[in-house]
Amino acid sequence: MKITTLALWFLIIGVLFAKAQNLHNSSNAASIENESFTTTGWNGTATILADSSTSYLGNYSLRFAVNGSGREARYSFSAIPGDVYNISIRARRSNNSSNPAFANWTGMSGVETVVINSLTWMEYTFTATAISTNPIIRVFAGPIGASNGREVFIDAVSILPQLPSDTEPPTAPSELFAADVTSTSLLLSWNASTDNEGVTHYEIRQNNVPIANINHPDTSFIIMDLYPNTLYDFQVTSFDAANNTSSPTFLSVTTLPDTIAPTSPEDLTAEFITTNSFKLEWNEASDNVAVAGYAIYLDSVFVDSLDSSTTFYYFTGLMSDTSYTTGITAFDASGNVSIPGTLIVTTLQNSVEINYTSENANRSDTDWNARNLFVSQSMGIGTSPNNDYALSVNGSIRSKEIIVESGWSDFVFEQDYDLATLEEVENYIIEHGHLKDIPSAAEVQSKGIGLAKMNTLLLMKIEEITLYLIEANKRIKQLENQLNTPMDIY
Image 1: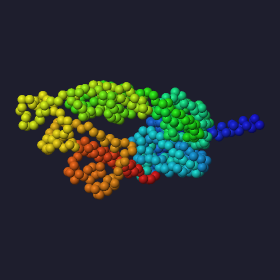
Image 2: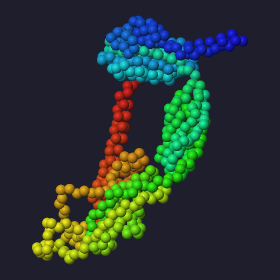
Image 3: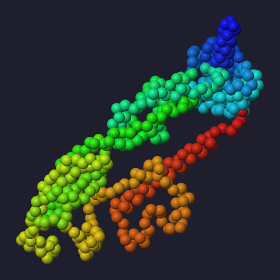
């Protein structure tokens, strides 16, 4: 019984070893295992020579050259019909070549014509299913009508049967647990899985969404950016090289509550101080999770709240020549509140108002050069003020520079941007007489258009045109590649 079992094991090992052997087993200049300066195993109508002037592996390679109407070199190997073979050949054309190619292989399916275009050594791989016991590989030194001497080189020929695929999944990760749990992070760990061929990596999912792949043998991962006092479901699955997956291992974890308050807003400053208003600014606060916003106080009385992106506030409707204590607190989503940042600001005294007009421009108490002009409401130049705008001008404005603080149009380049097709753009123009998102001429003539909005819209359209040009370039290259692909002339 022991002898029979031992013999069976030797038989299995022998079969597997035979399957892994290179079937390009002739000793010649393109052999991997037993290179020699010969052409053994290769024959055909082309001139077939061993060559020492260039090689990919070892010292030699095979050179095939057009000889009159003879263009073909071929190699036959023993195969089992129905079995799949992985074939790898290094090849390069010469300076005087004319579209050499791998073509017209017989006794196997799944192989198409491949032109050898590179002047340097390149690997060409094929996956073929044998349909006869003696398939034939063919290399053509040139197409029909190629001139004498056109040549191509090959080296490092490998013909390997595909081994049986691995279908056995790894074992599931065990003992999944969480350590170092905080309000925003935790350490996830597990015991390693096992597999008949070897575990390659682990996939981690959070609330059934993949968040990381961890290479084996690592068996832990720090998970960040969690929300406080929140239940999360985690699962870990192991994979092998054949992409077999284990059953997932599950764990539910609740993060700790957030009890840490944001830092206090700092460096409070006041500007644009008038008799009844001023602007207050401060530096951003920070938080272990995130600042949700700011609460505004005046003389300890709550005034307003702002989101975390805003770090200024205008106080209006104040009394002249009065000191006010301002307070700013930062708060987070868990309701933690910082110590307030404070600043005492005193409004200006009332003074005799001097209108800046041509009638009083030469008065002794009017200094146009030294005094800054501040208007608390609306101003009109050459026209009556419009309460909807800070400044209305009936005429032209000449300036070396105008700074506009506004949004910008880089959202066009985001992955989820909905770029209309050119057909949709054309249909919109036909129906409306102008581009989508751009106001019509009648609307601009009636209501005007803001400088910031105009520039933002124009940039948006320029960026959309850029995307159309990139796509058009890709299509042009695709068409060029199709035009440059030679016809089947072998």
